[in-house]
Every structure is written in C-alpha cells, then in structure tokens.
Amino acid sequence: SDAGDGGSDGGSGSDLISVGFSQVGAESGWRSANTMSIKDTLTEENGFELSFSDAQQKQENQISAIRNYIAQGMDVIAFSPVVETGWDAVLEEAKGAGIPVVLTDRAVETTVDDAYVSFIGSDFIEEGARAGEWAAEQYDGEGYKVVELQGTTGSAPAIDRQEGFAGAIEGTDLEMIDSQTGDFTRDGGKKVMEGFLTAHDDIDLVFAHNDDMGLGAIEAIEAAGLKPGEDIKIITIDGVKDGMTALADGKINYIVECNPLLGPDLAEVIEKTVAGDAVDARIVTQDEAFDQEGAKAALPDRQY
Ligand code: AHR
Image 1 (cartoon, rainbow, N blue to C red):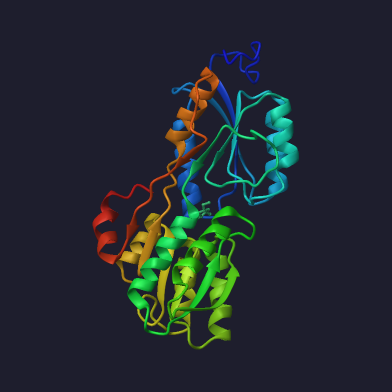
Image 2 (tube, helix red, strand yellow; image 1 turned 90 degrees about the vertical axis):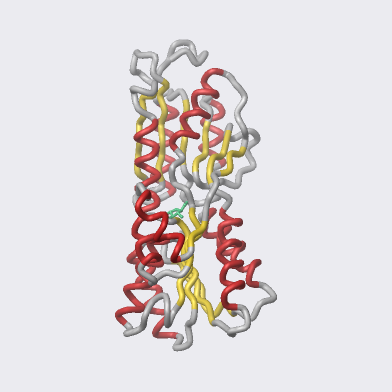
C-alpha cells in the first residue's frame, strides 16, 4: 500500500489496502447481513485485502484477533466491539503501532485519547426511544405490563436501547415488570420468554432488543397457547427479513430498524484515512420504523 507506512502492506506485496476486521459473532440475522455487507464491499476488486474473524461473542477472541492484525501490520483495523469496556490496552497497542482503528456498529468506552478515527453505526438510544414512544402512543392508559428481552450484557445496544425505551415510557402507565438478557439470540429469547411466562401471568407487551429474540419469544408464547401480536404484543429492533415477515403476519406489532449495511461507509472511511483525508468522527446510520402495514409494503424489496 502507499499509506505512508514505509511500504509495509500486511504482507500481500500489492497495492491493496489491508484491513483486519474483528466481527462480534454470528448471533443474529442482523449480524449475518452486516457481515455480508462488509465482505461484499471490502473486496479486492474495490481495492481491499480483507482479513475477517468471527469472535463468537467473546471479547478475548476479539482482543487476540486485533493483536494479530497489529502484529501483521495491517493498514487499518476495524471492529465491532462485543461489549463497551475493556479495550484500553489493545487500543493503546494499535495506536502505538500507528495503525488507525475504525469502530463499526457498537461503541466503546475508553480513556485512550484519539483511540479510533471514526465510529459508524446507529444511534441505539434513539432506537430504544422510538420503540418506547410507539408503545406509549398505542398503549398508554391500558395499564400494560411489559417485559424486556435485553441484548448481550454490557454491549452498547443493550445498554442504550434499555435506556431509550425506559425514558420514553416514563410517566405513562406502562409498567416494566421484568428484564433479562437473551444475548441477542433466538434461542436465548425463547428461553427467557419461557421463564417470564412461568413467572408472570399478566404480560401484555414484550420489548425485545432485536428481532431474533422477538422471534424466539413468539415460539414461547405460541407454545404457551397464546397469540403473539394479539394476546401479547411485541416490539423489536432490527428489521431483518424474518422479523419483517412476522410483523407482516401480525405476530409482531412494531419494528424499529437498525440498518446493518455498514460496508460502504466503512470502505469510504478506510480509503479516506489511508489517503490522509479527514473523516467524520461519528457517522450515524439512518433507520426507519415499521408497523404491520409498513412491513407488508417493505418486504418485497427487503434484501436481508
Ligand atoms: O449491535 C447491533 C445488534 O447486534 C443488533 O441489533 C443485533 O441483532 C445484533 O446481534
């Protein structure tokens, strides 16, 4: 590459920009779409040599992947941090090696100055707030009992969506009666919902931090002989095809989109960084929201 790194190019001997990307895992439909977008964009044809690793939702795997990328002298390192904290040491190491870091999808909390050049992704507090505002608009005055399926403990989307939703239903008569993590997986959502249904016989509404957990909750609700979307209302976040299908079928009531197609913005930030051009420190992805009619209209064009 010609990134001013003295000719080191991650060992490829070519003009491609070498990028090491550490992905969270493959926990959800959203994540698969996100991975596809990154792999489809950071191609050789587009001028990149991508090394991609899947951390299986484990921070220690991400840290060792990032250390490998540093050792290999990648031009740029990008990652989607599974949890918010615990990155200071490895971010310091990347900085010491002079390798720019780009965050995608999830934020970190760090004391390291100028730890990354840009953070590309949705505003998760806003997503939670939009979900809560819709719930309040539809159901305030009904005395609804609400349960929450949280994402991965300590992850930015779990922390922020919980905060946004709670803020939006404050002052209404919607009451949060239980909240537990389902780790953003379908299986996790199903198991936690089974527990909720055993512990509470008065659940009116589920707020799931992603579609997959909402889809797991649907299975648990149906197994309990109840109708999802009617006996128990469901609001989720993401808007992947399976979620949108359940919404169009009346089993989910509302979905706030989280756009997973971050590849193009990531490619642009990397190219600019390597060229020495300024990049925006924060790039906020634009998200829509869908009710059941909206899902029917959007489904035919849904790519993922
Ligand atoms: O960080 C984004 C979240 O991670 C998505 O909403 C969820 O589906 C994924 O696992």
